[in-house]
Amino acid sequence: MIDNQNDFATHFTIKNFDNYKILQVTEAWNNGNDYKYILAKNKKQIPDSLQKYTFIKIPVQRIVVTSTTHLPALELLNEADKLVGFPNTRYISSKTFINRLKSGKIQEIGNGASLNTEKTLLLKPDVIVAFSSGKDQKRYEFFEKNNIPVLFNADWMEKNPLGRSEWIKVFGVLFDKAKEAQKFYDETKSNYLKIKGLIKQKTNKPLVFQGGIFGDKWFVPGGKSYAVQLIKDAGGEYLWNDNDSQGSIKLNFENVLMKLPKADIWLNPGSIISRNTLATAIPQIKDLKVYKNQKIYTYNLKKGSNGGITYFETSTIHPDWVLADLYHIFYPDKTPNYHFYYYSVLLD
Image 1 (cartoon, helix red, strand yellow):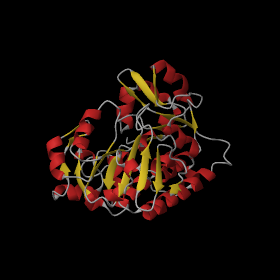
Image 2: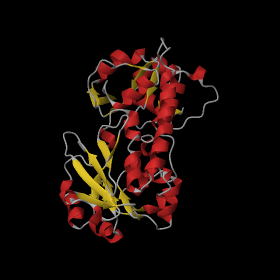
Image 3: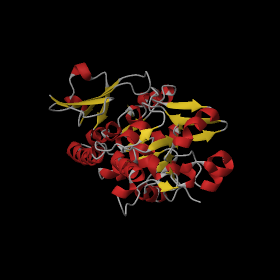
Image 4: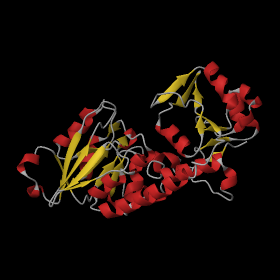
C-alpha cells in the first residue's frame, strides 16, 4: 500500500493498493460527514471487507460535475470530453465546455440545488461529483439507490489556497491520471510559493479592504478566511487582520467607515463594476484616498461568452494566478507590463 501524502489539503486522502485505491473525504461540509470511496477497474478486485463502501469504476468514462470549480480539472487533464451533464450551464466561462454545450455533447440537468433526476439518470454517468451543505442529502441518496455513485468534493472547505488546488489529485485518480495531476499541482505550488517568498522582505505593506454592501449591511472576509490568506500571502495587510472568523463578517456602515479611510486598496466591492455606480450607492467614499487614487479592483469584469465569471470557475485550481494579480495590485512597481488574469480596475 502506498499512502499519498498531501501538502496542504486536509479534507481528502488517497491510498493506493495493487488493484484498487481508497479515497476518503473528511468533513464534506461544516461539521459534516466523512465518506470512503473504493476505486478500481473491476469490483471483483476489491476485498470483501470494502464491498460496503461506494464503488467507482475507473478510469471514469462519463461524468457529471455540479460546480464550475470542478470543470478546470477535466480540461487540464484532457478529459473534457467525459463531461456529459452539468447544472446551471449559464455560469460556465470555459470556451471548451461552452462549445461542447452548444453542440449538445453536454446536457443541462437543472441547478445545483435541484438536479433533474430523470435527465441525469438517462445520461448514465459513472459518477456524480457533488458538493453539499448537508441539507440536500436525499437527492443524492436517490442516485446512489439507482447505482450512480456520488462523490462529495470538499475543496471549498480547504482554508489554504494550495489545499484547494490540490484537489486536482482526486480527479487524477478518477481518470487514472495521477501523474498528470501531480505535475500540474507541483507547478502551481512552485509558482505560488515563489510569489509568496517575495514578501518576506516587505515592511511597508498596503492596507487592504475587501467586501461590499448588500442592503444596509457590509460583508467582509473574516481574518482567518481563505480570502484573507491570499491577501497575506501576496503581501497585503488586511484591515480586519485581528478577527478570528473563517467565514464572512456582517458589519454596520459605521464599523466600516472607521477603517475604510485607512485603506490603500479596495478589493471586490460586491457586484458593482464602475466607480460612478459605487459613488452613487455610497456617496461618502468620494473623499477617500482609495477612490481618488483609483485603487478599487474587481474580478467581475472578466467573463466567458455565456456570462460566467472566470474567477469563480478557475481561481480555485489556479491560486497562483490570483496571487500574481494581488501581488501586482499591492506592488505594481515590481511587475511592470503585467497583464491581469482576473482583476481589473473599477470602470469609470
